[in-house]
Length: 518
Image (cartoon, rainbow, N blue to C red; front, side):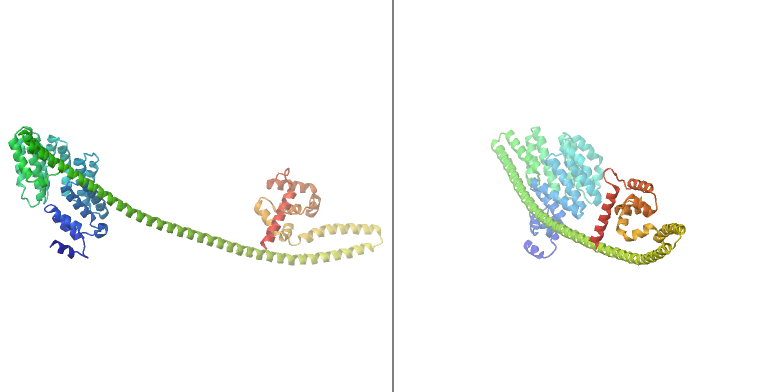
């Protein structure tokens, strides 16, 4: 029938197998295992969205067989996947179970972090009963630390809350178990029997799992046997041990060890060495079996970790490969963008150069036409001068001739200035023929005035101060003063390099740039 059911699951949602395993987890653990083992590997694929429930069930089943390494590993995985799946109720329960396991079995103080985590996730899940169980843990800690009076005080303070827990008498059962055990250890048998009687009344409560009741009851029988044995009440001890013997399967690891030891001690006290040794041998066999289980569990966990590590390594390699591809594509993209920018700038530079060349050509053409007009004007002026000179030479009166010569000289001096500056100033005339030089000079030394740049040009052309003074109709002293001010404006130390040499070099550079641009 079981096999038929499993085959019916083929192609169906395997989470149903988890639900079926949960039904039998207490009454038939082996059948529960069969359901879980029928889920195909890897379970991370078969049970997506249900892994938290799966690992919590495995933790509960391992608890029944006292496989501590597997308990710890399963509960940790339940917490991990519970957080991923946002199954906060499972995270809370697994955290609480892990707290109990770490605190009781390993005696590790770090267990408290799991208790805090349980409270956090039970709150997120709005699980009131889960939070009630969290409130029982301080009493449970005192119980495990043999602080029996403190444990009772904490339990009695909240006993009504546990009794009235909605639809679940487990918390009341657990509190009664600890009260009975505590009073027994405090040698208050009256209260121990009182609370045990109430404890037994919950046996048939439908909200209490039979496994939980039987487990706590078997533990109480071992506890009572230990107390009677301490008082050397052998008969009473043997009665309680016989009760516990019927429920060995419900004893946890600690209670099972105590059970074997108490039986051995009881038989030793009545002089039955053979039976005493038999129970000691049973204890040794039990502990050896537990050790082997934990060794096997550790091996399996290591295997699983290695498989997980291999899977992570494969995934990591894929991520690295993808990352390398992305980096390569990014570099190629950057290269293409860079190449496009360089190409665009080059095209833009050529366009700008072409525009500038057209402007320069237009200016040169305009200047050429103007110079043609000026040249014609000069030719006419020179022709007029020749006629005037012939007229003066034809005069016979020397005094009159000298007067005419003076008038001619004055006229030549005035007319030469007006010819040059007719319609345009001196700078503009020169600038139109030397665009690059004046543009560079203005860009490099913006403090220079127009008259400064005229002097700079004549110096670059290697004219002397006397020549420049004649061209500009200035005194030589004025030209020398102008040179000094120009040197200051451009920050030139004439002790290292003369102004004329500096400007001649600038003129040559401008000419070379113009030629290379063409």
